[in-house]
Image 1 (cartoon, chains in turn green, blue):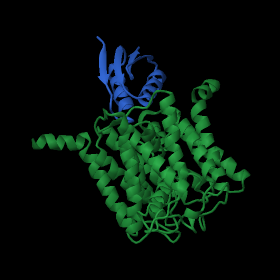
Image 2: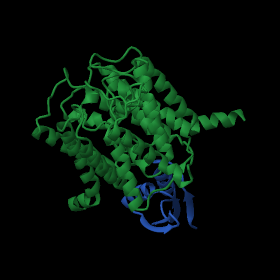
Image 3: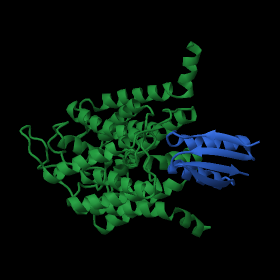
Image 4: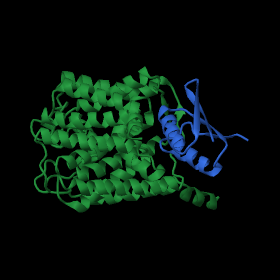
Length: 365
Length: 70
């Protein structure tokens, strides 16, 4: 029975282990502490590099984001799963991406970094993780009530290629680093944005992650969602594998520093660590997957997932330009208000796009 | 009589939830499911087999016809 368990799940376990080890090793090779791979933080850095926000310490074109899309694209092409599709409420997905990023940057991490912070010893990540699960749980209530963003449609192949092409453009900017009179492309000279693993190692590792995750459908949000919603532990096995592998790797690399105070790129306002991730977890669940999964989907031709990613990048710009991002001192001036507004918007979306809202509309007719 | 359900174009997890609800309602019989992504195909296969259903998959022009029976 145990043999059958591992045989059936060997690829998802391998994917989790690979992500866990490679994230902690990337950290050793130069990525910011407890941030070997953080999809939200890395998209935020890309927004900064393009000048969409001007927080000077978080500006870098992260090759990990590019690599994850490329890896997924390659896997999808090899296994004939590249299918250009779009049209499932793209504007709503943009908004959900935008709001997910607000929540993530109030906590200071996406679901991936929540796990990596936890196994780095950061106790505040427990509150983030609790918030994430709470957000997913609220999302599940809407799914059980018939929440549906509508069907997508098959479309021109070019539509599916747009996101990989955007990533290729970012890669060229990273490689040639043009300096325009405006100051773009911006690269941090200090702070987290200045800390990075060697470009081609990070790119290659991320491509392998993208490849594996496309094949195994790895998703940190669906891992929790599927356990609660359909009693399926397949993806959850991958997340547990990630956690254990990253923990062991951190212990070996001496990157495990337990405690709440003075953790890297984190704050200890637990209300907003929790609240930020409730918003992120809810927005990710309403959009169908974690930020990593959205990248993998956009690599296999899902233009709606690509719109979600662009929403996250726009959200990162908003968060920093409107003083909503947290710092080591705690949430930004407008962080809590942004989270509350984001939660209200998510609830309105969940309510109005489920059977609850549809019934109201039919009653009016 | 065979029943059928079309989950093409629906985002994850709606396809597997829709099929699961249908199977719970049917208890036994044959359900034909039209699916258009590998993710949904995998999720539905995993869910149905773990619930004791037999799954046959036919690939037709980049889509899948899943025949689930018990």
